[in-house]
Length: 252
Image (tube, helix red, strand yellow):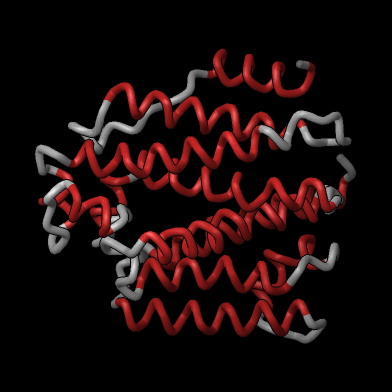
């Protein structure tokens, strides 16, 4: 990994965290939406070579030097807008997939771009991997999301389990919440399987994607085995376990 690639990835991570902080702040929803709309406009201006907000410009400068696709930057912001405007309280399956495409697919596409891994074969990995990562994050962060008024489980799965979706905290205490979660977990596992079938080659630098997939897939499987009786306990990977997965992803 070159110096500019590393700097771009760090800038991408800082942007990702900044957007999360804005979406989850204590400001009123209308104020957060207004700020996110401004950030979206400023990112478009900066990506086009204009002089936007200096603070934001400093954060994203190393990323913009590599000329990332502006539509993926916009997608990352749009995902947070969905999280704030109420659409992610028991969303339709279609809206849920749109959210994870924007949030995690956008992040994955930009990371590939930073690493100069824009090969068409890898582009076909990003969508299923982004969906799998997004669904896994939803399933292990249900308690945190409920604290922000979100219930990111498909309304179809909740209805099938007979769970009212009006109150996220109450829905997570429902005795059949595991049924709704397992439905999403099966879809996430299918997307991991689809991505994994395309990550078997020796393309330069592909091992970080394998490492990310293996770690998050293990978290998903751990969550399924444990169940969702206590959504505030997030499954974890230990340091030795993470090191083992990294070495396996890199060297086989």
